[in-house]
Image: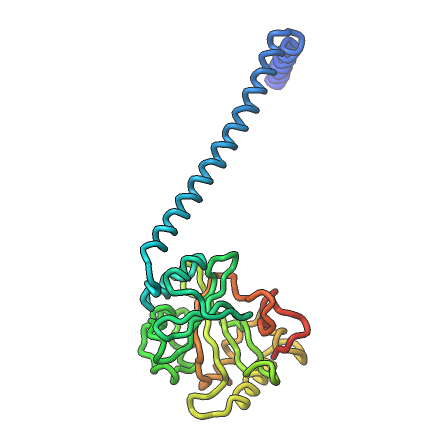
Length: 298
């Protein structure tokens, strides 16, 4: 009985809806009213789109105005100290960096070259916004790289820092991946390898980079160290790897580094936006889409 009553109620509701629709379709006033409401809705959508575009334009002008004011304050760069530069470069436009640090001294496939307090700084821009920078570990570069890498324990002076020191000191024991470099470079480039390590969550989704030229802090030979690293990579691999180092781009190489490159000198350090580890058309970028087929690689 209850089921029969429910069916009847549903049928009455359906008939009521159909009747209203048929009335609206037959009655000229109702049809005209709906047409007017449709036009009003269209006009409102157009107005909303125009307002949204104007708001976006005003926001862009405000951002440009603030950046122009920031640039105008600095009459004679460099206007950033070394520490200010390290904290501020990432995410800044090239015009802002040029106005604060000084116009770049040169440009190469690896990035734009700057000099700040006599320290050479390399910056790479993605869509005119700084996405990566690096600088050598030397007395000429007085940056707090230890803070940048969230290292709490004492570290050796520049020139004596090894890969072993780095992987032991960085908290959280994150993975370690290859980014750029080559081993068997011939006359193309001096052998080196740049590693990429996920930065701490407090870093704002930026990755850490450090580079070795394979020279040992204990005096060991760079060629011997690079050979040991390549052998360790292949020995730790779970599949047959008879090709190039590019086969190991997705592999965590920290174990191989710990086994073979603990004494290898850290030549430079860097910082980059999460997910960015490539320089478009850079021939030595072995582990990104920017790798150019046919170029030398390790």
